[in-house]
Image 1 (cartoon, each protein chain N blue to C red):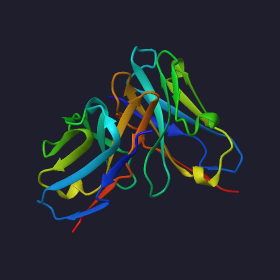
Image 2 (cartoon, chains in turn blue, purple):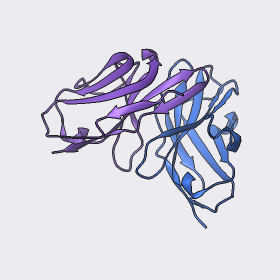
Image 3 (cartoon, rainbow over the protein chains, first blue to last red):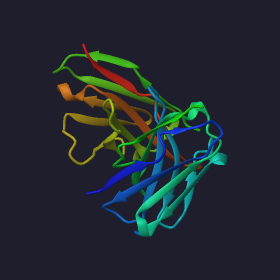
Image 4 (tube, rainbow over the protein chains, first blue to last red):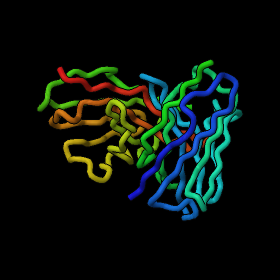
Length: 120
Length: 110
């Protein structure tokens, strides 16, 4: 059974850098074809894809946020870390990590999400 | 960038009725890379349909997906009380790699 869980701060100040960790089980990021992505959802709004990392360390980013995002993996710890710089109140959202396979265009399953509020 | 437009924004129906949700893409999308998710309040999205028409594991057969090109549909044949939620379509584009979600359709009890 694949499970994922997000962790990180619930409150960050404007201009700060956000660091979120996705800890997963039931699969390995050293297995060919495996990927982990990050998606966010502002309160009451739609979903927005942020970034994705694959087993071979290939990384993909949302074009609109690429300059602010970094995604890394620690295979030994079964973790994926997302950093987002220069946080703004509009970045207030629930941040999800999710599993995907390289030849599949969808995310399944998802973590429970973690709400991050950006406020001074 | 491909934009996905879902309609209607809100759909009010009664249990037992049939629901038809639409997802229209701004340009042609590969059916292989079109998915539908269900999201209930306070929960993460759950994959319902992938490849435009294949049900994910454990999804009841009252859920079905169809469509191709720019027009895709999610149909719920007979609504159960637990089906009232928000539904999102999502596409994957490879050049450049990106994932786009629709704005969602809220299915509410009439």
